[in-house]
Image (cartoon, one colour):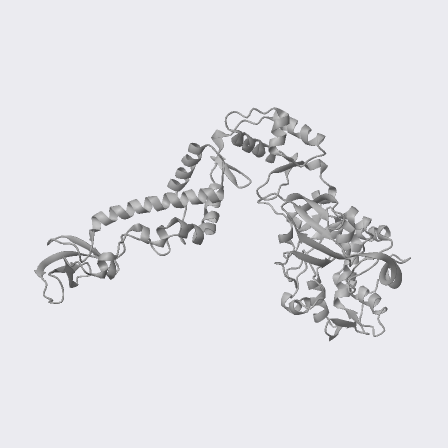
Length: 529
């Protein structure tokens, strides 16, 4: 059967599957070096091991198949040859004669019966021929070149290997580091209790594992890396501790001392997903003024590659002291391999004051800004500037102004418990998005509405109609800008802009007036508070 005995199949690495022999090879390697290793390192070892094994297999196949044909060599009748120029067909020499070409040095001609039953003639003992310069070995195949394989297939192989390693009960993992379970250092409950006490004395954390080990007198033996790995694994399995370091850095915090909004989603950020036609809303969302970063919305109109981003703050995040961790915003904040919560440091861009921030990865928000918002007298609609900084820090800033009174759209809770809007003079201390700014002078009274589950669970349609009625009173034409409506709806209920836009474009009670303006139809039925 025709085939290349010196190369791999073209889809070898694409259809790669981890075999028992591979796992045993990696397991023994970890035993030999005695150190936990990351998945990427193990993938490299896996590739090296496979290439080494396949080269051995190729060598065996080559010996069986025959000698690589080169015009320079002499051959004998009955000798098996391999012809790279013919797709590595093999054949047997059946006859040898003297060649006849006055332009060439003396040479021989061999007749070969190929495995395809064809008979062909080839030159032999010919010193000047281009095929003499071609050296065919396994290393000439890019699929047997480590650097090529790792660069091309490394990420794919990581997924395959991670899935198989996780099934192996003899291996344990922490923060992308793998190691044999049998070699772990015993971490008993006494050491874990001491670790809790150390963190408690340090305000809950965060502390590096090495700092904890220093204070609990855990014997380091001859392998401090393994001791640290074993303690990390023990603390990870103990519900008292939370690993809050960013990728590549392990930091521990006492779970019971973490801020409440880190452990539980603030009521202002709770959202029940709404099905809507995303294609219907996409074009209009891209026309919003400024960067609308909403962790519930995946259509954004900004440049995530910039080193600085300025977003408009909506009421739920203002009240909760948080920021959205939208797809565009994620690259500005630290992340982790697996940890659901990551602790980092905010730096005020003007005062250089530092304070703790938290990335709550499962729910896509960043916490820790409540006091900072209050200290600057910010309001919903304020423009927040985020700048990339050194690892573990994020610079946050606003365009501070000399305090002055300006006419601002203001949300008030009426005597009947409903929300009404009015244009009132408010003290302004920072730049804001004119479409989204809303002053809330009595947030505590508004909180009572958020605490009432029945109030929060009203149909979105009803809230939109109510907000359109209120906002239209502030516009002589009775029109409502959809971006203003988005900010207003979020005064009462957490909702991304997509469902709002989609409903405006599809419901009979809404009239599109062009651009981003809508009007409530006069014959609308229902929707009253």
